[in-house]
Image (cartoon, rainbow, N blue to C red):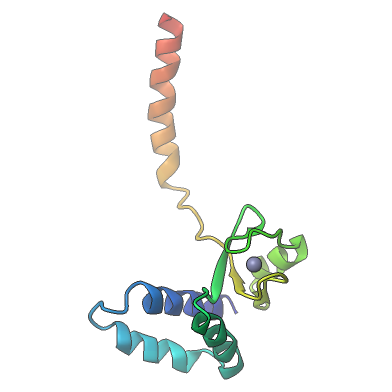
Length: 122
Ligand SMILES: [Zn+2]
């Protein structure tokens, strides 16, 4: 199911942002073939109204309508067992991309060291 919402999210990006990119249409056709028809129908209905079909959850609220998403819904999404719809706006919900844990700590160490030294001088 995680893959399904990933496909839906990719499809949305392609259709809304990258439609003119070479090869985008081919990928759109591929993705549409992978997504079950009822889900695609609901997604298309939202898109036809000029809305996004997929909303990313930000800080436990729907990224599009800003209504709080029940904790249970987030847990189901995290488990990847099922796809979930926002109870308020009806968009498919997806979790934000996980932040790469390898990169930030190295930066934090550097930036943390300098201000501390400056603070000690001041
Ligand atoms: Zn919503």
